[in-house]
Length: 365
Ligand SMILES: Nc1nc2c(ncn2[C@@H]2O[C@H](COP(=O)(O)OP(=O)(O)O)[C@@H](O)[C@H]2O)c(=O)[nH]1
Ligand SMILES: [Mg+2]
Figure 1 (cartoon, rainbow, N blue to C red):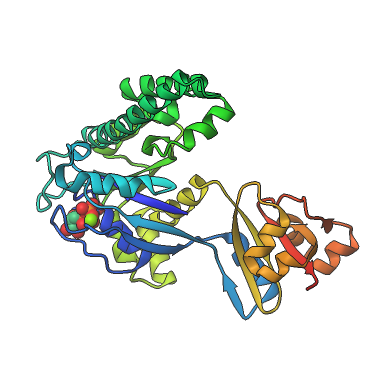
Figure 2 (cartoon, rainbow, N blue to C red; figure 1 turned 180 degrees about the horizontal axis):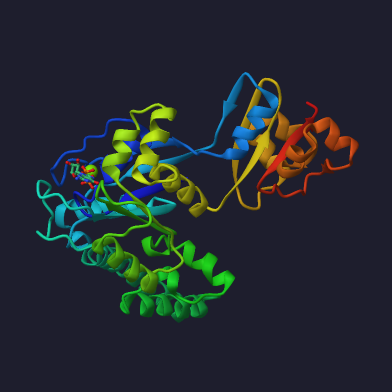
């Protein structure tokens, strides 16, 4: 599962990516410094893991991770091949979700490709390119489907109607995900690999002196625009520059500095949490004196497959899952107490893992 970081050159993608991964992708005042996409594995902060770790005092505590990819400079004309455009677009197509970084910071030393800072114009440039690229893809699909309709292949007429509707949506400047669809159509549309069908989040990269509740004119403008254009998508305000500085601090220093700046948590934590939510994943936990660990599965995963994440033997020899809800475990204070009080459920092969389940798998090989 990967989240692609996209946006215009100098929006602050690499700076943010570096802070996220504490790695060293090149961040320079140069539009095409990141050509190959950079992959970073980022730990997802989860206070449930902290709490469980406190309870069990295990030798090891393991959080889930999410992958971020720094996809570099999309520019105006990308869908027509400008600035290595097609290459970037094909990278984005492989992502499960997108984090769109928009420049809202002012800094005369950092050039802007359009020579002026206007977050709404920037966002529109990127969306325009993504939509054009999707339209091209869709058009090819439509031609293919028309042939299917002519040949009277099953379901092709309905499929064509859906494609035409998505095309209408794109032509009106909206993202494909905004096209009204039934649940089945949604699944059908997701298989089209359209970029604008992917879940999006927006990251406003603001000036260092901007606080959480006090928006600059640029940030306010962006917020107002997104409220209309994509109201369901999360918008997160960060200063990439500060996040980069913070990533070198220890926890105590970080806290003090954040307080001084008027931020409740690091922007990165909010970016990671929102990104993780965007991917629609389910987290379950295994606990014990050796390790407290958070695991990630796709929503709707059944118990044996989830067990297989831990070890293929556990999946193969799956007998049952003993499941306790995280909240109840914390309330009762121990697994023993939970069992005593009848809060631990015995679940079989058909059980679908829920977010927050604390699971013990019984198996035999
Ligand atoms: N003042 C300021 N400069 C920033 C900020 N974010 C990025 N920059 C600078 O802008 C330049 C380009 O940033 P980079 O992360 O490489 O942008 P990218 O092209 O989107 O990857 C670098 O010199 C950064 O230090 C910010 O929030 N404030
Ligand atoms: Mg970059």
